[in-house]
Length: 259
Image (cartoon, rainbow, N blue to C red; front, top):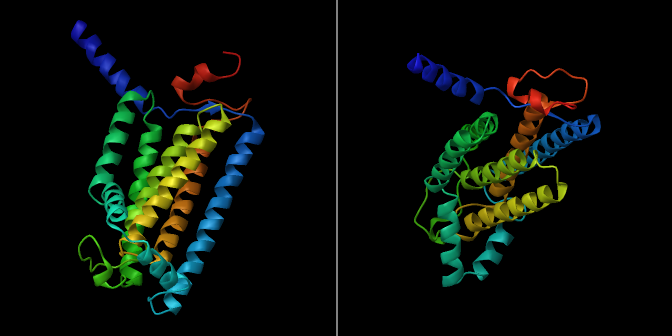
């Protein structure tokens, strides 16, 4: 009997982990989330299309302010700044960042009452990786000259920047998933400001070290805005309820008004 009870308890714990959380909010707040999602998707799509068209018209070479930004960053190079930029490139690189994402999602999944948000984060990161690889293969844009690269030669394609896209997705999506459940809007503002600083640093490191053009980073940021908008829309549709709507997640019933 005790063994059977233990098995039932484990199964219940596993089952409850995958009950999608639901939360109540005011109708105006939910509409604001949907509007934000639409704006992010629209801005991201327009910015990406504009960047892509410009890059293709330049025959995948430098476009717009690409060369002027590169020349400006070349004038700033120093041993200390290069060391800092290499550190940032490693943190947001294809080895360290996936490990960070894996640790965050696994730990978050075990600690949280519901696994919905870490699963959404993992799906968003995977979407960014797949999208980036598809676009890289289609556009086939060359990187800046190899002699300008400060951390080893890289002969792969550059549009969009996988480093920047990964950093944007991780920082922006994680910030939304964490602070969307907080009642204090000021904390969300601080969270997104911090995420924005991280995005800028990730992009600067790739440009400074000579691996990408500015337009590569712009394309990555625009794609990340698209993914963030999709995450906000999906999360709001699946978890946000207004008073009077039915709650379907068993573990969320205690959150209903008046309970």
